[in-house]
Length: 309
Image (tube, rainbow, N blue to C red; front, side, top):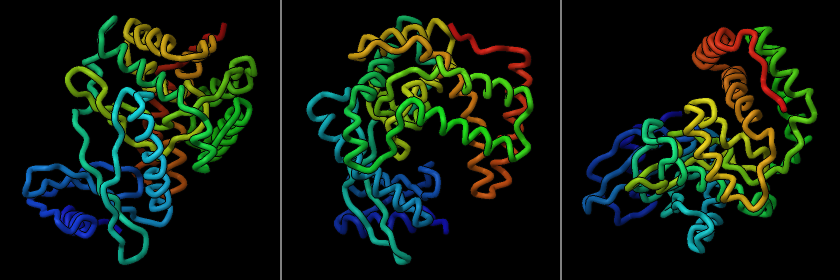
């Protein structure tokens, strides 16, 4: 079931009866949801998200509970950015509920904004470091996944086997990933509270600073490298050096020596997870996209080895 922006605007008024929408437009939201940006007659901007199925609804509720906990961390300065704050809920006819938020300030991060030794690169490293300093107890209290390093490695192996069974993963990539996952030394690290789905579109920038981090529905205790993969695989080394340096200075525990190697691996493996998402949801468009990405990645990495000190 998919909802139009006008339908979502009506749900916004159900969440806050005094709200009078004058404009509504569709925006990207979490997988399995419909989202819209709403402008009211006072010029205020809102974001409403409605689940398309029960699983997405459970995820939306879980994220809202986490956001409530994170709001306290914003208030006591443990986090140097804001998070969305639920402002109201609207029941859905088929069950479940939609959530209305005040829209955050800022624009989506553009990689071109990140420069070697630059203030924004340092701020981004600090922001990720602060996320990883959050107590794992938050995850335990909310029933979020909590992996130790061996659990996480095993999870990756299971996913690799599942991806291999699709028949779409090139043999070269399978060998590369299998060797990395079987190298136990690479997986000696302390797990941390992670965002779980960090990417440029989840990070908003305002006045040269990280203003808001979005999309917490995949949060868990896991490998810190997973939250760095999107940067390590996309940016020049001199920029990532700045980010990692700031990240390390923020952490109370020195990052393990294989952090960046696992981040590279996580960035590559994200394509296999995209394939699995397509296979599980039987979405041929996603499968075709992932297959093309895997072929390109295999070509780019032909003969290359992950560096492990």
